[in-house]
Image 1 (cartoon, rainbow, N blue to C red):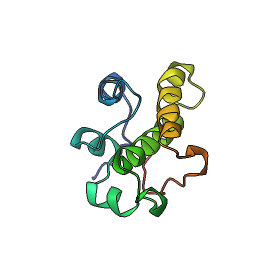
Image 2: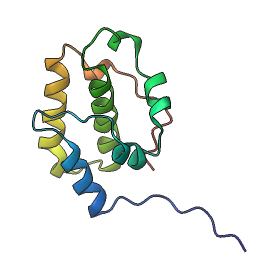
Image 3: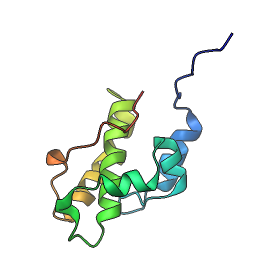
Length: 112
């Protein structure tokens, strides 16, 4: 008998990874650790980057940060523990001249 695929459970290691990968300014860079956590490859991430970010110097970090914000908000709905982390990330995106609330996060981001 084949067992059904298990859902990825977020554990304390994932939480500490997310926190360790966030810069002191509030953004996340694209790296293998986060790509693995999100279950996405860098090519897909690059292809889905919104065209309005194309002229931004930090476009990859802005896009990764937006995706991480979305992922955290979905994974930890109702948790106040992430409030400061998310605020710092959203403030950083705003400082880059981007409105996070208008960004469309692709469906491939697995938040189950």
